[in-house]
Image 1: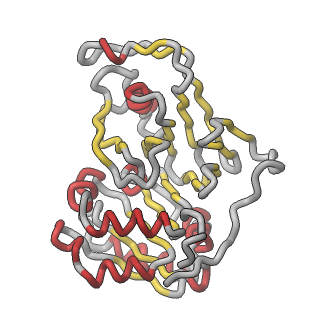
Image 2: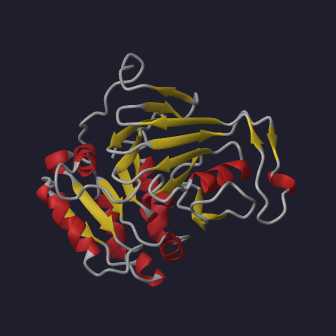
Amino acid sequence: MSKNLPRGFIIPIGGGEDRVKELHIHRRFVDLSGGKDANIVVIPTASELETTGADYNRIFCDLGAAEVDFLPISRRADCENPRYLDMLDKASGIFLTGGNQLRLSTILGGTGIAQKIRRRNAAGVVVAGTSAGASIMSEHMIAGGASNSAPTEGAVNLAPGLGLTNAVIIDQHFTERNRLGRLLAASSYNPFLIGLGIDEDTAAFIGPDGVLEVVGSGTVTVVDASSLSHSSMWDASRGQALTLLDLKVHVMGEGCRYDLVGRHAYPPDEHAAFCALPNQKVTTN
């Protein structure tokens, strides 16, 4: 792959995506991965269901990808398998399934597979992940915490993620499980991070230019804490409700865009600044 190619798309999906009818999110992922020339590798490690890898193989094959396979990684030793590393070297799209993000991070973290995913994305390969596979994409990962809760000290548990981006922190099943409180708490730990709360059947297609587009039937909630004038997180006691003043929150439906660098939201009808997502072909080694 040419060293001049930009970083590949990063596509966190909120879980519960349509896998039967229109498959808009998966179809866009396949298109970005090369369409009929796509070589897609599925990593079902987060799931303990034996059928997960094969299920996604079928979906991507039905959508016309040229080659699809999955890596049956269930222990850390599997992550150094030369055959699996070679498969990622040839991939134009990598897909991380849902399940348990701590299972995913404890098995993949610090291994050859994790390093390969980062390097391939930096070289232009598209990486998508749903539910747990979405959470692990960022440098700081939401590993758990309370749903249906106000933002409080201790409302969210963090762990290291894959580090495909250091600009955001991602939560999934967002509206369905009422996770605004824990995303606000996560954002308050370091206001540099932009919080992304992604609903089910919804994805944030983050391009190499740092602009994301919302695709799907739900919303992406953006929490921008960079202009906080006051946060009580630093001296709050365990379980105490937080005070967070001058937060900025955007709730964005399909077609909306958000510039992660400029921290600006755009409605669906503002196309002057940003083009539609390309159906680009990715050339692999």
